[in-house]
Structure formats: C-alpha cells, structure tokens
Length: 245
Image 1: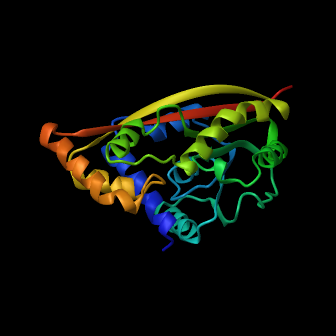
Image 2: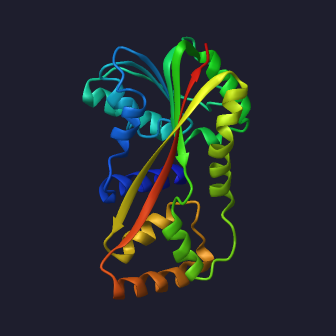
Image 3: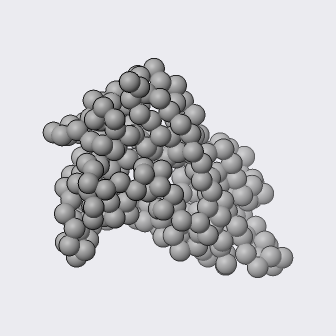
C-alpha cells in the first residue's frame, strides 16, 4: 500500500480515537446535512464522508490512491450503500453531471493549479450549489511545532506553509470567480496518553524529520515525566462558497 495512504490513515485514526471533538459531524453540519442531493467528494480518502452521505444522497467519490478507492467500494458493499467511486487526479477529472455540493476536506490544496480547479468546480456546481472545503487554520499543530523547536528543529515546514497559504488565498480567488464565501472554524484537541502515540502521529505528518528523531523522543519522554498527557489542537478553517446570483 502507498506510504502516503498509510500515513493518512494513521492521522485519521489519531484524530478519531484521541480527539475530543467530532470533526465528521462538523463537516456534515457545514454542508447542511443534505438529503436527496448530488454530491462530489474530491479526495475522499477512506470514505469517511462519502459512505455516510451515500445513505441518503447520490455520491461520486474521487481519490488518486487506488487503495482508497478499493476500500471505499468494499465498504460500500458491506454497508449496502450505492456510490460511484473513481480513481482519478482531480486536476484532470471531468464529471458528467452537475452537483448540489462539492466537498474537499484537507485535499484541494494538493491541486497543481488552484485557480483553474476552482473555475472547473464552478462549472460542476448547480446554480444554487455549495462548495465546501477545509484545511489548516492559524495555530494548527502549534503544540507539536513547539515540541519540535524544543528538540532543535530550526527549519520551516514547507508543505504545511503551502496548505496554510492556500486556505488564506482561496476566498479572494473564489470571489474573483463569482463566488460568495463564508469562513467557519473548528478545533479538535487531541490528547496523547503516552510517548509512542505522539511519535506515531508525528511520523505520519509532513513535519516528520528523521534527523531529529532522537532529540524529539527525548523531549517527549521528558514531557511525560512531568505531565500525564500531551494535548495537540487541530485547528481547522472551513470555506463555504456559493455562486453569486
């Protein structure tokens, strides 16, 4: 299985099992808990949204990773839900229908041309359709960043900066294309109960750097000598966009 897929599954498991807030419920509320709608899930991953939404909607789930698409299809069969799962790069994907909602959670910033992707999504949406996507907000993973700085990491983390820049720039890009936008936010404190949980999570992120692994391990061990847990807060920015009439 692709290493990036395994890392994504590790992060998702940590968020769901160790988090204290319900990210899935927040996303579903942000798109209005739709029923009898057509929905496109761009970068569906393991289908945490697509499989739920497919129970009451017509869903197309798109992901680049073959392992994810195979998993979504398998789970759809087990759960007796119908959806259309497509392995594709969403920079080149062209749907044959229009949608009431296009959804992209922690995915759209992987596009090679954000403005072009937004323009294409505009064409895919029905006139009263909703685009909702989310990504990292200010202060996301700050506690982990401080831990890494305490470990001697002095460099910037380019991939995280790019995701954050995308979320900051997206509202203007969307408005230039005729969308109205609204920002929403969410935070999920993740409580780690032992050093191995933090190490496993860190290794699954873009912040991982093997060169400082020993130093990071020592700093984490020192933390747990003084405190019973380590809390990392996932801070999320969501953008709701509709075509202006």
